[in-house]
Image (tube, rainbow, N blue to C red):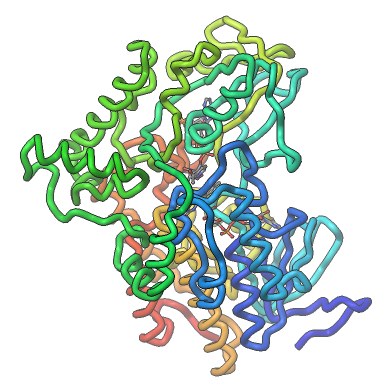
Length: 535
Ligand code: FAD
Ligand code: N01
């Protein structure tokens, strides 16, 4: 199907936007079906999240043995992770290994940002434009742009007047940053801050952390990966993966089916302590109702608050660091020495919950009329999550409708895979899918495989256009909200709700529950792509 233009194919079966884990696997899968595809990627290398987030301490919080592709058993067997939670450079190395192993780079155009995509209704094709002047067409367009790839820097007054160095954790310099002898300000206390603060504190002359909302963190207990664990998993990877897919979050959380309120105080504490000592995200699997019942949740929250009080020397600082919200409502953080860092004489904490950051001056950060002089500011202020990267592209569907206009009140999708009025456009881990509430690699693989199968079906049946019906989409959006409203997730100002970005519609974006979601996707296919109109 492809024509050439100056030696470079200009018409493809598919255009894929983004060369993170999603875009890379999508390319591999489509190629395997004999299709032509072009990937456009803003960065100059593969890896997405792990290409951009090079801040000190960056690593996964899903254990390495689970945070990896499973589509190739050879790949699973040949790769060895060095630590329980792999550090960012190693995950980036893995992404590069995958790119080389499957010869992906020849179809990826780096340093190229997709700026516009328009659906041509007469031809049933997308016309895609880039900031490098490319203009190509494709029957299908796959957005592999990432849920956490569009950085959020609050528009603080005076931001540009700052004369020191400014960094965002999500766009970190490739050659690293040496904070030795520097006065550093970190704004934010989410996962990125919690990972980087202990390391920045070791280097900096003084570190001032500006905290709006304290966060819960459970120790990682990271260390070299136990060879016995690695060998056991490798000996039967299929069973290990299959078990994870039965879990609500698609990863081994070792869920306990009891209610936190159905056991004695002692039993409850023992359960939390066991999980605290084991470390990591499975802490939230301690009881089945932690995200369903406020009272149950408070038992876990209070357990963590007590842990914070037990390690932070100054009771006032300990209190400031102790979250009062529902634990797990924002993504639980996994830390290494985070709370202990506040016992260091060169670290101070500034509460900006009541008195927000007023301004940035040429010398530093102003809060409640006081200027905190710093040589460098680290914005650990997160992302315009789930919709940010999608809406940065001017996507125009049927009748020239901009996606931004359709989603003005919040994202509307069918299964987080497609949105009505934008035929032949797919989103990998889009809003309305488990995505960020799951282990993302299996979620990415499930989406890529669903999309590839769908495109294969279209080809086999001679269909040219697939578009979800408005009815199916409305029903799905309603269902996503209903499921969320039965939990405690909507109770805090999380980025799952878009609450971190001023003016963003408050809509709960991810779907809760990996297994029922996969079942629904399979049912849709079994019923001849139920909920989609094929033409
Ligand atoms: P990304 O990796 O975000 O890749 C998207 C790519 O698209 C980027 O490279 C971007 O440059 C490119 N792009 C976007 N827009 C355009 C455009 N218009 N034109 C061209 N290119 C474009 N998930 C887990 O499950 N477990 C973890 O432990 C975990 N740790 C994380 C740690 C950090 C610091 C962060 C930020 C996220 C973490 N995540 C984790 C989530 C992580 O984003 C996913 O696991 C996964 O890497 C996403 O892959 P992706 O390919 O979908 O998106
Ligand atoms: O971003 P965040 P992140 N004034 O949005 C604060 C994944 N991830 O980059 O909570 C002052 O969580 C904001 O305050 P508040 C993971 O999914 C994983 O840390 O909105 N402060 C918050 O404290 C994670 O959830 C890992 O009140 C302001 C912080 O900035 C997601 O990526 C590591 C502010 C932002 O926290 C995002 O994490 C890193 C303002 N105007 C990331 N605006 C792992 O461990 C925002 N803040 C694997």
